[in-house]
Image 1 (spheres, rainbow, N blue to C red):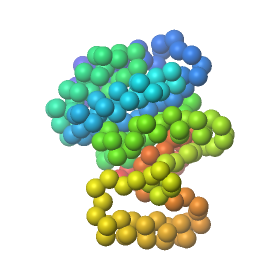
Image 2: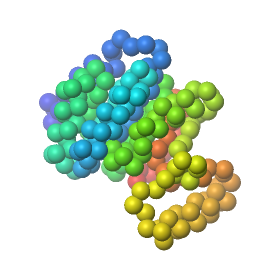
Image 3: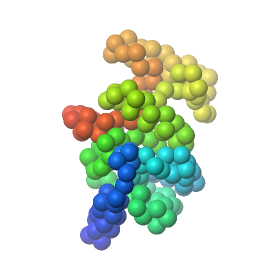
Length: 201
């Protein structure tokens, strides 16, 4: 990452995070991107159409291996929404490193972790926000195994293995969560920053 890129990221982040906004605009969205283009545009478009009043920022987390096409879309989104969208180029390795860094940089009271390939349905963000605000929970997670949840493109055998694995993990960890491996969650930002990370993958 060049000095110019560091400066550009900092300037973009400062512009977004220092803007005047309503107290209820307290949601930071972290969207990871590697090779997504159309789905990244669609994700941001849905977030803006349905959740803009609640959003403090949308952080697009990219890696050195993010494709030039995906980077071009990210730059396009920053240009179109300079007071809301900014791009973070990760330093720590793996997707876990990108997410961990973005959690530390987020300015909202709550932070949503999601993907940019539409596997994490952006239409559900409003439901996650409502649930964490109403319940006072520290973390709210989406599940593909509850009513209304779904899997896209899963072979029946893979689906059966996933269900079996989820049941096993529920027993091992003594939890009622039904989808422990689904990376679609909203956290209280202060709580997630207290996590002692042991892995980045």
